[in-house]
Length: 356
Ligand code: ZN
Ligand code: ZN
Image (cartoon, rainbow, N blue to C red):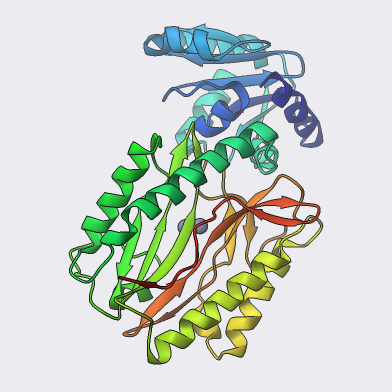
């Protein structure tokens, strides 16, 4: 954990700040191990202090060690501790993507005489590349999700509602050791499957429906993300059968394109080309994928706008989809660790189509 402050200080130097106030709790967790719901971390070239309130006195002492000091107290005491550390800095960065308008004014008042400036993505850039321990936790989250789907898939049959299946899946993940879901589970049946982010409702699964199941588990803060699309009651027919084939092909080619040194937007282009050639360019309206870690969506972005070059240790999803209003949609998603030789899938569940 202590090693994470060193690369952060390199980033701070690049951003030309000699102090940084970290207010995003996920970033605080990443840098210190503290998992409470209220904290601020202040960092300078040679010091770091985490401030929190009395509810977290014991927890912060247990979780935060090494070079990070802990200051517990009321709001004033916490602010004083931050000012004591960064008040002598010339330029202090605030996390522009997370601090509110009012928050930035309060910090500027507190740090009167210091040049308070916005910074963006300093910690997020570090989080982009996972270490071995993080990869291990994400593999565990993905394995819990895989096992849960295997356990409840026999229940995905004509007659069950989207909500009922989502609940079965969520509780199977809990039983399997997840501390929670990675995000709100998506189960979308029939025409609902044509809505990429449908919320499960009382729609009953019918024979011949495409059923999109997009879900993940959280394990020690790290999240998994996987989508499988099934056809209830047998093999898909007509146009839907072609959608399944095209998306499977697009996703397989995208997975094969993942490798260190490849531009994230090129992985997107590979997936998109297959769907374009099938005549459905307008039916694939989202990016191909995203980074995953402590957050379900994090850097890098895998889309036509993505600027990242994939590097070993990045973890990204590949999840193209085709959505035909009225007919149904298909999305297939895996989460992969980028290596020099290619993408190593963390999600392993079979891409079976016909169920029950
Ligand atoms: Zn997903
Ligand atoms: Zn995803």
